Length: 106
Image 1: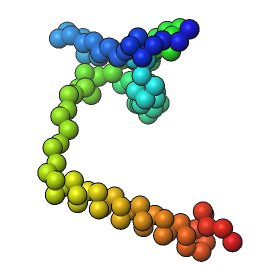
Image 2: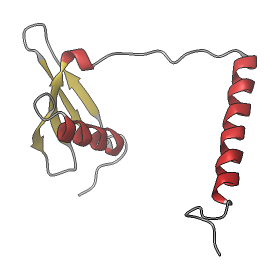
Image 3: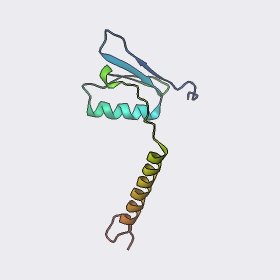
Image 4: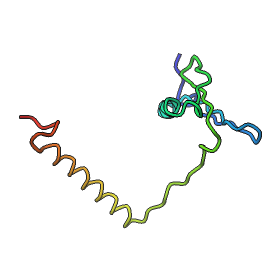
């Protein structure tokens, strides 16, 4: 049985007494990120439960949680970032076409 998008939720629960926060999610990207954290930081990030609907519950330190506001870029900063990304992509394409690169063909 699969869940609809409305039913796939993420719930983060913590209080003032317990150190670990409990994160329940059906979000694939967050599940993957938590699984990788669990592999690399098993003492801090632990899987607790996998439900039958694709959701997982992890415990993580509260200090790992934060709410961030994305930076607001000016039009000039956006244009500079666009140019920088375009240059990096062009350099990647150029490097892949050099003889001996793994993606060039003989």
